Image (cartoon, rainbow, N blue to C red; front, side, top):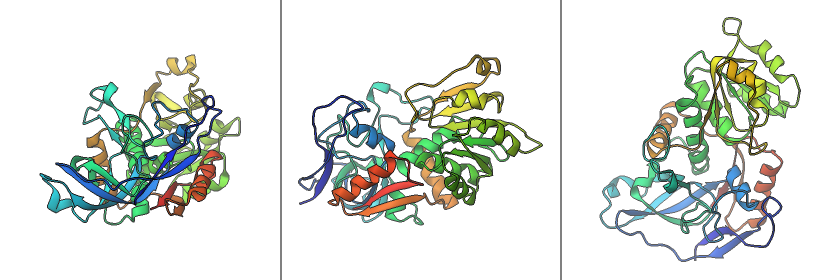
Length: 355
């Protein structure tokens, strides 16, 4: 029988708990009208999965399979599938969220929006399992140059990066100076790759010089160690003489980023924030107000943006960066090791399970 990887409930306070992984046998699902049965080939971790295990994420489920990133092969189609001939036996990427069609401002009904994988009410939807049934509208053909592992690395990070950079930053243009914080994480790396492909001058921050060096090999113009108190001063020295300022910042850290970046951003510059790994709040100094800095929240994206992102990856032949893989959904201890990498920020790229 197929397996699914969930978390097992135990008592403890949010933030102090760490739910253990639990592998369970599940029946093989059958697609209904307009649905596809997808045999999953790979699934990838995101920080939200770590937050789920710590009970720091809303609406967590002890029944739903974990992970929102997946790539697989359509092995069966249900009745009345319009795209049956187009999708059967094809490798596909699965959409990581539900309830957001096309509105540029955000989900059409925020109360109906959710990311799948380890959360209510999607008891059957999560990528850490052998088979999944989804509506045929919830897949995109995987770009042909991507392996299943690379495909699984793309959905959440690719969509989040696409919206944060292309939709929200207002500066995804050739020659613009963009700072991407926390390089090494999946979203930051996708932002770097998308920005380089668009001709932006990408600069990065990291706690590791090794990660900065790797980012420069991928096309970053330069980078600074954020642990240095005057990192913004050091970054200013790297900016082009003809454009000695940042046009935008794409940030997933929070904390003091606005205070530091305000000295570098142009008047009216954009800070596009997709997460706060440092903590659930961030500083907002008066200096940012006086400089007309705009702070814009950005999270995941619409179904339309997902399609646009996948097409961009296909056209530009972009391959997500993989940090490490584990083979086998039943290798629970090894999968725990992937979570350990994420806990300490060891990874440079995505952590993926080959199913």
